Image 1 (cartoon, rainbow, N blue to C red):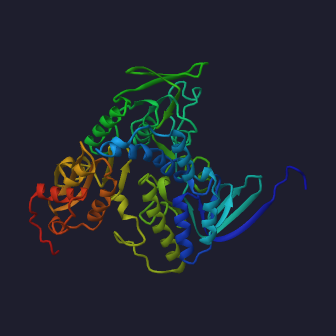
Image 2 (cartoon, one colour):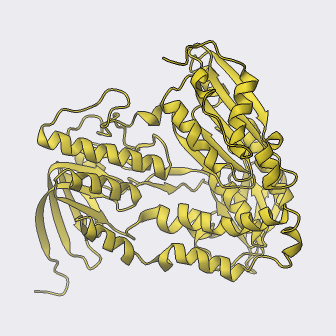
Image 3 (tube, one colour):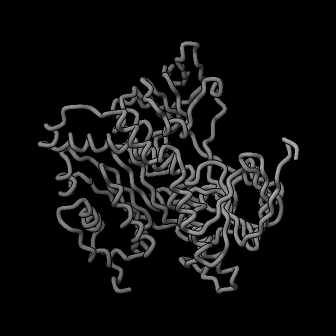
Length: 485
């Protein structure tokens, strides 16, 4: 055999999953639990973006600063704080959550779940067929008896700003994996990644400038972005909203100059956090009649439109670019593939076990800035545009006993968006320190369409931050709906 020859192996299994992030892992796990032989294909690290370059490392970078600020906001504890963050310790803790970018533990989980792993770059090469090119050039042609699941996620999009490539701009991958803290850091983008990393690196000692073309956290309630902008400024971040970026240049000295409509910004590194695109450009979509680089359009069973064997789960379908929502979709997809394979009856009515109904109006998310933002469902503006009869109920979170006990000077705001025709909650937003845990109750109320009259009987413990629920209901007033329905 010549040196440049390759080995080709053929295998047939019930289900092929492309992408071994949390979404792909969940889809594969549910398929195996349904009695189907399953292979998962991964060209990078098993565990995916969330484990190594997104959710886990970013939150690890944020947590130490959150804890320090919380302690400093409580007299008695504040006096015990005599130093600043230990940056090497923070980075080391971040590294521990990524297992130092080693996926051996994740591979062991696949083995325990009876999911086979094929490493390499998988591409659709025909109907129910995936060709995988391994790291050493070996080729494995996989054929699925029942389904191929695409769970390749999304990738950072880099805008066409002159000089951006030559300047070596970072994306979310480089900033979450940074091995040192830049003295000066510029971040372009006012979304979740931009605001969270501005919070983290300001806490770690960087002089941070955040440049946003519009407002911060667009798509959420306006007050959320306003609170976060104020919080960033308190951390020493320079925040430019409504600001365009015209050019980026890196000098031979290493200094980066960002020319914006607000003037020049000078930094040691620049991060681009302006959005995400579908990770489908080199997936072989053209071989099955789809367009490379496009999002995959799916129905509520996660089946790609026009196919009876191809599924798209997680970010790749553009329904909700959140890891937890992708895992939710993956569980539904794995179950529906197993049901279709066995000829079982499908439960596809809204909220059935084989559909991802929550994607349409009950998607929770948390932004781990300071203050935090926790939201679920549509904003007031979005609900109104959707044709609902809407009433907005606001309350100052700082007036709740549990909030004021948690720290001095607590500031925050809560909002309910209520459908007045049915007297049920459509959306909820909480902004304040450590509000992340409040969103699950709101999500449950929305999914269950619990009448406000019944929620009056869900008594919050005193004194906790959850008392905000009582205050919001009091602000709304006694509902007229029958609580027994």
